[in-house]
Image (cartoon, rainbow, N blue to C red):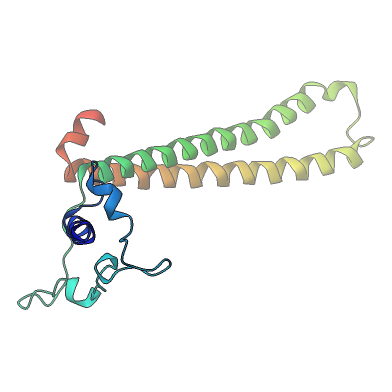
Length: 170
């Protein structure tokens, strides 16, 4: 009869994850029927409202602590990725603007080989297409330049907030 008392005592003293002889007795108690657990093996219910910290009494306005350095570095990486995207949009805008200019140059260079009145039905759609491409390229370029300025300002603010970041971004 001392065996069940010892196993119940070892169940109470055994900790989860502890290896050794106590793990054999911690799995189940020989006195408890199968399918039922002993009252000591059930976790106590937690009251989450008691765990939550109370707001400070003297502060009316919530303030956030400054973000840790890895978050600032990740934010800088995100801004730099956006900057690369804006540079790609600027490159695309310049290429789109260059296309109508090169086509117009080609038409002017070959104009002595054709009569303008005979090919007017081809030149008008090409002129409209050139105008549309010119407007699209200018819009892409101006939008990219505006976004680049915003991203530079954001990077400047990040450098001011974190001195270690200023070393890497010059």
